[in-house]
Length: 162
Image 1 (cartoon, rainbow, N blue to C red):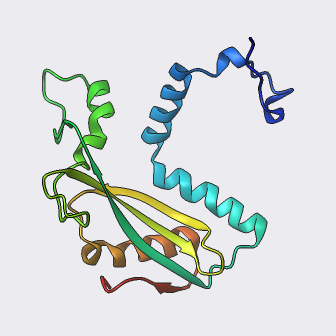
Image 2 (tube, one colour):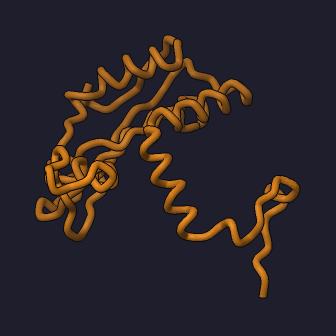
């Protein structure tokens, strides 16, 4: 049985053997190292411009995701840890104990901040953050960054954290 590629890959030199879990892992690491928020905003900006997404009003909220298992929590590489290993473990700094909306204070968590268009809930901004980050402490900064990146004025709709 041979793997079949979707039509999107035909004619661009991608073969089924090129798509495997090792390649996927390397791509995910490169995306992380490039900065997920920056990459997401660039793609969203291009798509929003192409499809005329209305940015007059924007909805901002955060969600917490709890995780199971052991996670590293080093702040910087030590002499025994090569820089490449530290790069791979950077995400561990965002997985930590914090206020649990799931009523599971025993579990570590991380946060995801998401901003969507008011006219159709099209995601325009995505950010992964520390599990102990407060909406009240970060929402104003996120809105300022968004205005700068998108160069737009908008009405922001958010919860009581503002």
